[in-house]
Image (cartoon, rainbow, N blue to C red; front, side):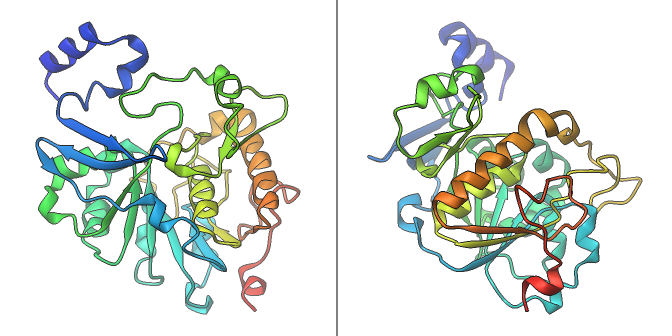
Length: 300
């Protein structure tokens, strides 16, 4: 967006709405009765969106969530039965071994730095891509709307909803305590889990946490996660080479945010009778949170 447009926005809107400055005045939205973005216009063109209400609890049974830790290389995906598969970020490199039904990308720097992956993802008309409003805008600007064949499902950070005021992190529990679809980590004002993604998704420093809220909303009751290593952050992801590594900031948030959030997720999943198994045997996420299981045993 132009520097002038940003300056006008900053002069006419409070700082708590700064997260919208790259969207205004080109993005127009309407919300449905549940609070989800139901209509989107970008530069006067209507952008088709997946209706989030129609996919609520539309799945059941098992699902494979593929993250991008180095342990993915240890898995023979040809031995895994054909079940719905969800990818995040660079997991697309597995597309010749698994069929992705859903994809989730909320890291805008990933879109900026891996356009060759995004170009293939958006060309798949059998796939639903969950991404943020900023992600949709980036994809249209980078590739054009004509090239986007996948379904687009717009998701929002609960604390940074589009054209609404930012919610300070330490006020999350105070602001949202009355919303019955949200549960909170005990003794934390900032870590929460939302069962209804139509009103927003809580961030915890990793796309996997977004994915768990989405998969619970979709109705899956047994989740297997591949590549959830959460260690050796200086090592290449399974699809990267030593000379082509995007920086990771997970290490900074692991113990203060990510692990506590996964503890809450464990409780949230238990409430819905959802099982979760971590296929990364050396994962830094304790087995007391997500039980670890060898992939060869998981699908027997």
